[in-house]
Length: 154
Image 1: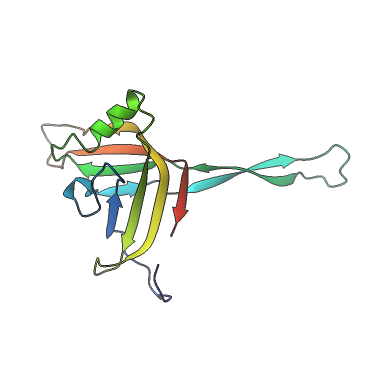
Image 2 (image 1 turned 135 degrees about the vertical axis):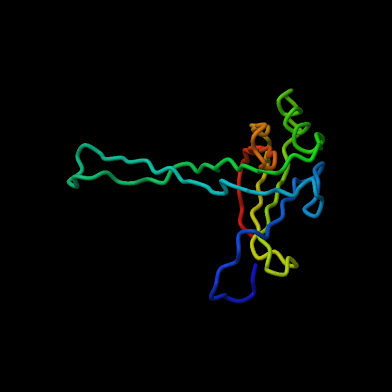
């Protein structure tokens, strides 16, 4: 975390992803993602109004929380061992494939993380290969969607 308050926000383009034990580290090109989307959480609010309440509005009760799924996108680099094999192991029922994934927003010098999201017990739930077209010039991009048990902000 930054030690002092800033009067301008950090840019969104300096970030690192660590796919946890068994995966590539944040400085490995295999974890060089183009985009991370969906970081967030929600708290469900239940409305309840007893029949004998004098108020004509329900009370709001805090319920369970839900962690959003996180989507990682990267250019196809011909490396199957990082994303596909992890997804494939989960698909085949391997319950030991949950990882602690960290996403760090870096300062302008790319030396220090200024904020870090920690996804606990994350596992891939969806893999999408690139859209291929003979007329395009865009980079082939694959994506992996992760589902986590919890998210913490450091």
